[in-house]
Amino acid sequence: MIDLLSKTDNIRIDLLQNKLLDESKISVSMLRLDLIDPVISGNKIFKLSYFLDEAKNSFHKLIITFGGAYSNHLAATAFACRKAGIKSIGFVRAEKPKELSHTLLYCLENGMQLEFISRELYKNINEEKFHGELIKKYGDHTLIPEGGFSQKGADGAKLICNYFNAENYSHICCAIGSATTIAGLIKGSDSEAKIIGFPVLKNLNDVEEKLELLGIESSKVSSIIYEYHFGGYAKRNNNLISYMNSFYMDNKIPLDFVYTGKMMFGVYDLVEKKYFPEGSNILCTHTGGLQGNKSLPEGMLNF
Ligand SMILES: *Cc1c(COP(=O)(O)O)cnc(C)c1O
Image 1 (cartoon, helix red, strand yellow):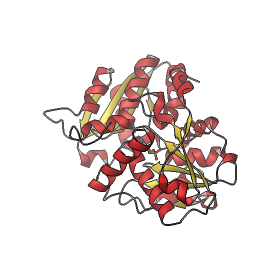
Image 2 (image 1 turned 120 degrees about the horizontal axis):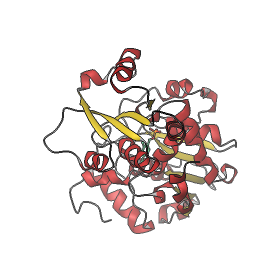
Image 3 (image 1 turned 90 degrees about the horizontal axis):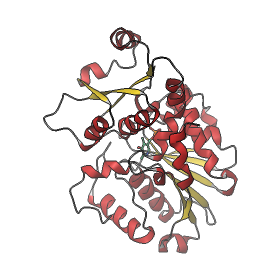
Image 4 (image 1 turned 45 degrees about the vertical axis):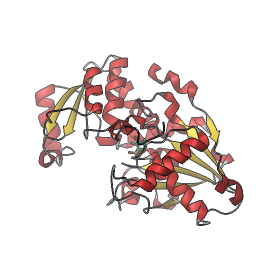
């Protein structure tokens, strides 16, 4: 595998501490993919890995991909491409702002060429015609769909399963954006463990269909829990922020407010509601994304 994944040595599993968990006789552990790097969040680097291999071994050595102004995927792609000696172009879903977000500045620092396109045009990014225009303009390249959503992205995410033994757990939890990561977890953990996904977008009600597009039969999907999006993508409220602060006090583990904070809030809430049977042994994947917290007002988080 590509050498920039070498910091995967840092990955470990932590047992979470909390009174509620003790009282409920439920064990919750966390797979610390965030420890790979604070910026290139854990799951992103896995989803990218086969695309990077392909681009690195190609003649063109160019990756083109897409994302929003705070996209963890764009940041990870820029970083990984620089490390691997691949040129990267990121299409950003926005008019060019006067002041670039910290994420986009990071992308520029890592040598990514940014192209801003309107939300209207952005709707066409998965169409043949749009891809044809990209080839005309930039020549041959490796195209990564938004969020890595593809068979290749899911196969990359499947590599996450090398870092835990699914047979040790009753449930495996994961935040859902494009559903590529959970697809990899389902493909890779051949055990009785139930795989539970927490969508972080409000109108993401087609996760099952998305998984089918990635070759996952719906019978393999244990549960998608739609109640913890907090109003939509990157939306938040005080409950979420104070939960993240108390989680940090208990465990000294930082969560991000877009993905892992919402998943963990959901897991604890479900424990409280007795969703999980006593004796459950739950593994939650910390998929990283911590760079996103930089968009919060200073002092809001205690870490
Ligand atoms: C992108 C991201 C996810 C969602 O992954 P998908 O494969 O798009 O479902 C989860 N957690 C974090 C921290 C992310 O950055």
